[in-house]
Image 1 (tube, rainbow, N blue to C red):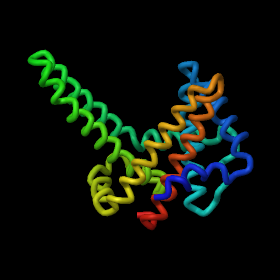
Image 2 (image 1 turned 180 degrees about the horizontal axis):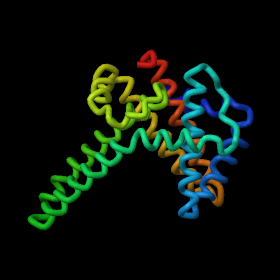
Image 3 (image 1 turned 60 degrees about the horizontal axis):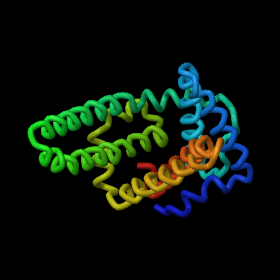
Image 4 (image 1 turned 90 degrees about the vertical axis):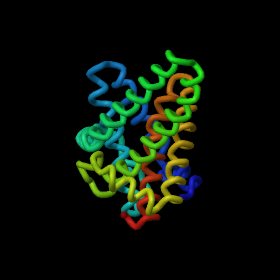
Length: 210
């Protein structure tokens, strides 16, 4: 997993600035309204998935700006829905235990905090191969393949850990773009999607589309 190659990937398209600005600004602005969230968010996700699949096939260009990615975005969301619900329930239970321990003794809550962090990291780590499975194999049941995800991680531990670190770094960089006035965060939303999918494409190459 080459972090530098992932970060450079979107810039291989000579129109990267125009495409990322348009996709980021337009879709994030649409999300300002409650109804718009159901258009802008899935459209941006679908745009990212399209880019990931393009790179897996050997292409380098970012998808064009448009609203033709909404359906694919919803397919991705639905594929991850069950795991998302499981993850939320687990985090709520872990959080509730922490609150209960805090009421018993403050020091117990402090001891429990590392456990909460480990659980959160584990949930994120297991979820990433599921996202990979949808992008690479178009598996609408990707979010139910917890056993497969764990097996995939164990079989490709070093590569998956580097993939996880790469996604975290890309997320930190794209999130930090929010400090740029007006359009920084919007641009970051699009470039972040592109980086995540470029990382998935690299993971697919490293694991022979496992």
